[in-house]
Length: 240
Image (cartoon, rainbow, N blue to C red; front, side):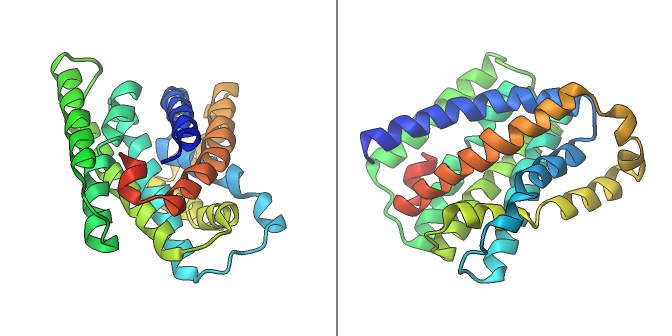
């Protein structure tokens, strides 16, 4: 990996690390799934009306929207709402380094090198040490949810690779089109219709800040660059 790309990925990790604290601001005021649905709604509309659909099959866009919206960020936001600290959610989501190795090897025939295994081992060791030293709040429900999210993050990389498009930004926007509605339906199914009816009363300026920060720098900018790196390098290399 080029040094410039590596540096930009480190900067992106710092941005995403801060994003977990921003998510915490939002889930303190409204339902976590509704918060995530608003995040993707703001990221998609009205931008989708001005960007041509990428030349990929609809199934890739739908799969990406569901995996990215519900699988990764729906589950991650729920994990924070379930008592997992923002710092621990950020670290545990990096368990995708393990599933990413398997996904890259099994589906894309990527080589598992000694360096990748060493990096994965060090990441797991560091995570275990942090959890042992109680570096942040961990709940069983939150742990399960964020580990599910980490698997979906690896699946996202596979979907982007299979789509094989050069229109990364358009793919990101059109894929996210399929995230808000399933998230809202899941919110109503799990927490009742009051999650929507109470929204105007619960919505604050901090909620708006949380939604906008997640929608624009984190999602539109961050995942445009992330998916470019997925297309440029192997899934396991980027995730690790």
